[in-house]
Image 1 (cartoon, one colour):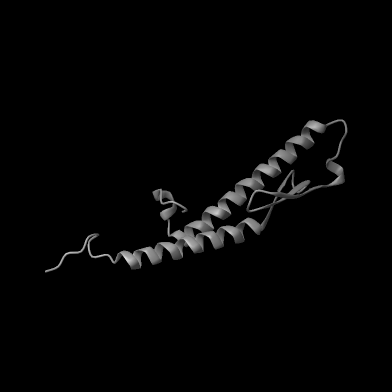
Image 2 (image 1 turned 180 degrees about the vertical axis):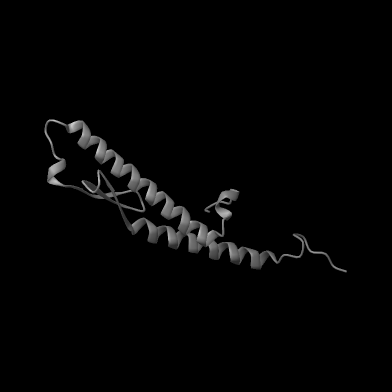
Length: 112
């Protein structure tokens, strides 16, 4: 009876699987970083478009939300829309990564 280290795992096969998973993670991450996510605030008065890589692409304001007497409200709406877009982008990235790693990302494996 011959025993192999790693409870019978083939190290070369395991290495190939890890390399494939790493390549898949890199591909999905790059694709997601290019994807554009939108979020709104104030019932659509402010719309922010952001990439999965957290780069703001555009901020659109409806004319009725621009009130020189209430700049604080406008600033709050912009901040709310940006924060919502960031959260959506993070959730999208986490969802895509989980589908590739099968939930292994939280195990502290490098690159996952």
